[in-house]
Image (tube, rainbow, N blue to C red; front, side, top):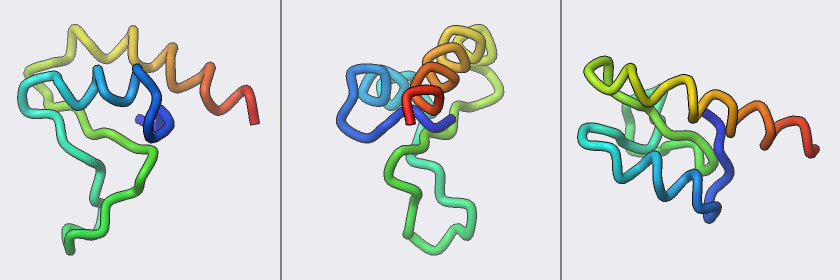
Length: 59
């Protein structure tokens, strides 16, 4: 999810167990604003999706 590097939402998402910076190529170059949440944290997805929508809407 694109949450904005340095935002409280980004930091909170990274604190979810198993979460990590989104690195689509798997070569150690993650997207700076993005966080990948694990499947077993699916209960967290909806709140963070709302945050992601708000983040991209402010552009």
